[in-house]
Length: 253
Length: 253
Image (cartoon, rainbow over all chains, first blue to last red; front, side):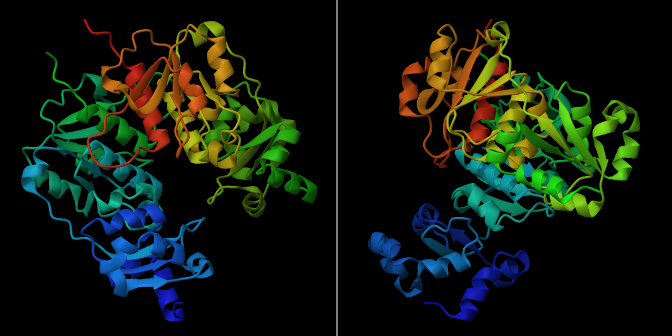
């Protein structure tokens, strides 16, 4: 049983302004919250059906004082999912620490004005699959703690650090790292040399591509060859294809 | 100005049952409908704002008797888009003709129980980009003429033929074509031989993967190498990565 103000607070977290004020976001669903328990994330509260609490009793022992048992009806009232799934947790927004050595050893995404919450979420999921530790976002990208984005990451938002920062400053701070920019007239992705196995994979806005002011920082423009007639590829798909090819590149013998 | 029954009919087309009964589907948006005018598709009606009709007067000449001028308010009432965009067309569902020679010269997708309308739409868009002429869907895939799917294809549904058919029968009918199945324990995608440049790229359901009954037809199981911790990749992303690598494969010298 939870109070009306508590319920209102949780529902307010669907809106960025209130998330930012409170410094927390919502993780939903049986699997994502179970994974959350195994991480270092600071959990403020867990709202769960009695059956879920029972099933996770051992892991929940250290969280005893923040677990709140709720009814299915209460869960439906607080959930942003079309099909609420047993449990919902309030989590402190993590502070991203960038390891400068790791940054020279791995590819990372740099996302310019990605607007669609689902696109951002699937790109973070891809980064997690490909072993990319960081996703850098221009300040005008959609918010990573948007419920739709969190959902689309399928838990990967708990493992990949997402950092909002002006991309031009980021590139200037790391002049030794290559910047691969996804453009329509770049070098064939499949003929591009990714031997160094590091640098920024720069992906532009869904409709307008990479901002003109960032073009000067691109050290290698790359293109996914077009064999048919579609005018463009979805931004998340393009990001994933580029990351897969870059990460799996083998230096020719 | 349109009648109430007309409006009800158009709105009913958001539901598969009524689309199937009428044998038509809806294409929305200024760009998609403009592209539609250049295709061989049979258009039953075009509902558009006066400004759009003016802008496309030349191309609309042969469609004069099926163009209906509507108000912005009427467009909002009939549209399935969150931001209605000037025009909406009612189009006859195309009959797919499979060219057996083309089928031996190109990769095609075979989709098993894809459930998400957005995933199906982006896969069709990818097929169009990659020059893949056909997308085969198991009968229990989501409907291609779902408004969300049509929207996600960004016009590619007008160029790629989508065919619903039992996949096991399809594979049996084409024993000479390889079947590349996306599994978690297959051969490294980046070490797979795609020299023949044809065959089926078989992608499974978002949650359950490829149906066990189809495994016997797979001639080469393939996997996108995992470098991080995500449990899985989004089905549309996996499909796109596999298609990009297959289509762009160069036989080693």
